[in-house]
Image 1 (cartoon, helix red, strand yellow):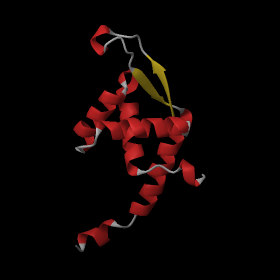
Image 2: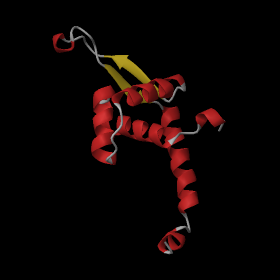
Image 3: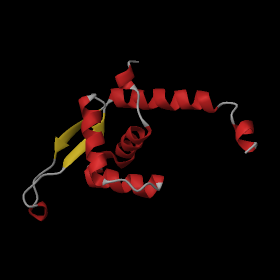
Length: 110
């Protein structure tokens, strides 16, 4: 893996939220999923920036839905996690799990 393939914590949250939401993954729902599931207050703009960055890395793709009058004729952009995004999530999870192995006794000392 190159340095650009590593995922930060927020990128992981965004990717996991897109996976959880499935066909209903667009900026607003991803933002709400992070807030609801992770208990994190983040700016909606940060979610969009992360989605753009993940798309530039080839980890997610997007398609536009139909324009709607309630959105002023604009269409929602829906996101899907690509195979490379799933692989990056697995690699991040595995690396973290390896680091966590054996650490619990040290945490109990605090």
